[in-house]
Image (cartoon, rainbow, N blue to C red):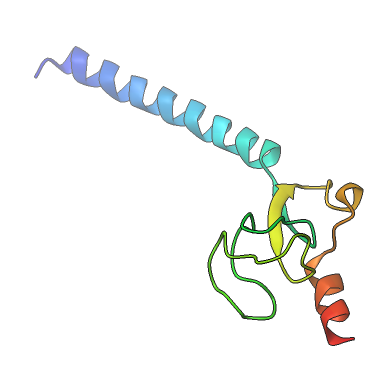
Length: 94
């Protein structure tokens, strides 16, 4: 293999990795999500509910069940009239 090609390839790889990690860091901030309880419509929950009656996405039986949740952009749950996990757990104990 030509040494010049090997060096060029190595430099290109390092440069590409630098751009990829920078893009991933930006995506992590932009795509930050949080669980929001009490806003999922029937069949549109993202995973298991707090009460343990199911363990998969899409199995909510009622709209806006307080123990069902969806991922939403971070900071938007309250404006959707949703609850944090702690609030949902406290409500379930009542």
